[in-house]
Image (cartoon, rainbow, N blue to C red; front, side, top):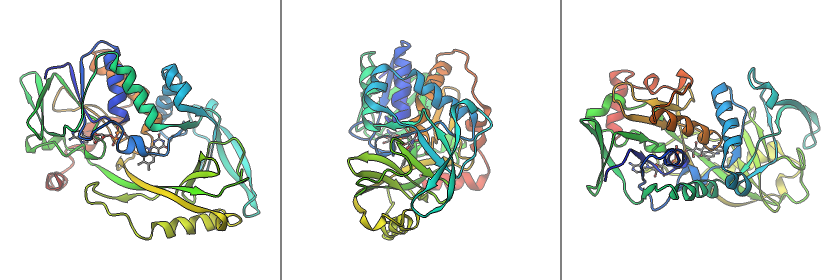
Length: 366
Ligand SMILES: Cc1cc2nc3c(=O)[nH]c(=O)nc-3n(C[C@H](O)[C@H](O)[C@H](O)COP(=O)(O)OP(=O)(O)OC[C@H]3O[C@@H](n4cnc5c(N)ncnc54)[C@H](O)[C@@H]3O)c2cc1C
């Protein structure tokens, strides 16, 4: 199967890149080990669209994503609500997007809490967002191969060969690693020097019921995030909110077993944060999924420094839904040979080939 680009992974990053490349006239195949797109982090996340990041490039990507989403996406998958983020100060970039605000803590009678208010933030319906982009790119001839797990990649001459577990071979001058928590898993010893130091971390989300008439901190705000005491709540359904206690548990997805104590930790957090109403709340369903982080918590964006034609679009931690549309637009420009200027802080080389011990460990994990 020959094409211009092979994308490994049909999460939000792979699908967004496929959208931009196919729109630019490239022939693209997306190879996904699951039976559909957005089965992992991209369909199970909290869907909070956010502009406030320490790194200006991330804010720029999020802002540019929002103003360039196709109309159908903005109309059907996004709700502008604004957000309040406590425990943060105004950033020294993109100041026009943020405002300092103090909110009265009606729950505890404490002094007001200092927050950053961002009026452009809002709520994404993550699964329908990814599906919509996938459907829009199908018109441009993009091809999806589901239930097809890439087992190895290899460069022969000017082409990459990506081989699945059942020995199907895809061939293209470009291969993009957008495999989320599994980014190192198909790099055979020949490509060991490309293995990146990025790890998956499990995070739980809880649908909590019983918020009737509870509108703190403000009626129309889509989500409130307290970065100091580490928890957030976002509007979910009638009288329900999605809550996270910001757990970050290093985990291999295949062997991860959720902690039994996690529900107790949620209850304690709610009792501490919202003592006046915690007793009236009850737990609905809960789930977990994996965020992938480097040690500097920045994404891996760029062409491999020793294997040309291998592009990395990975480690988008907890910000992939907000930033992926512009991040992958820039990746599509790069792959198409157009000039693009991206922060050098994101280059894959910074997290590759660290030392021998790291490499042995990474290969051992495969
Ligand atoms: C609990 C939680 C809450 C979050 N909340 C937010 C939020 O509110 N706002 C926000 O902006 N971001 C949020 N995020 C982050 C966001 O979800 C991620 O950054 C984003 O989904 C990552 O997308 P991805 O495409 O890199 O990874 P994934 O969605 O994991 O996609 C990678 C795909 O690659 C496939 N794959 C892997 N290996 C292979 C292989 N060998 N062959 C074929 N296919 C393969 C996988 O099956 C998977 O489908 C959250 C994440 C989590 C976990």
